[in-house]
Image 1: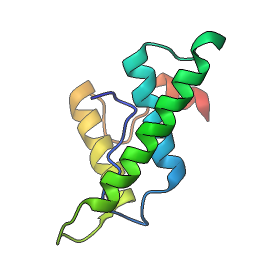
Image 2: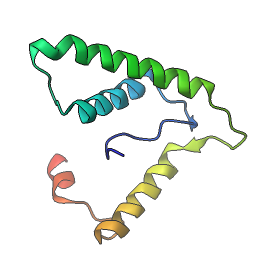
Image 3: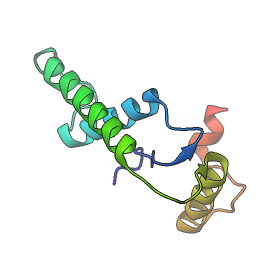
Length: 102
């Protein structure tokens, strides 16, 4: 799975339309190989993003579970911990790119 595509299902507060569209955009970029399509491909690219967004919206609206909704902060902490184990950094440390952004 693409690193930038996040799990969207079953969060409190619910996933927003903007989050669904952002994930759809990342998916279409990954599949097409285009970060920014040429003018000749822009309409097809935009249409694909719209269709994937609609499909994600339909999917998330159709799924059912009895589990309690996930907490975004808890899930983010789990992801940071997995990253720390994977890349050998302490859980509180940040990478060069993160510290450059602040």
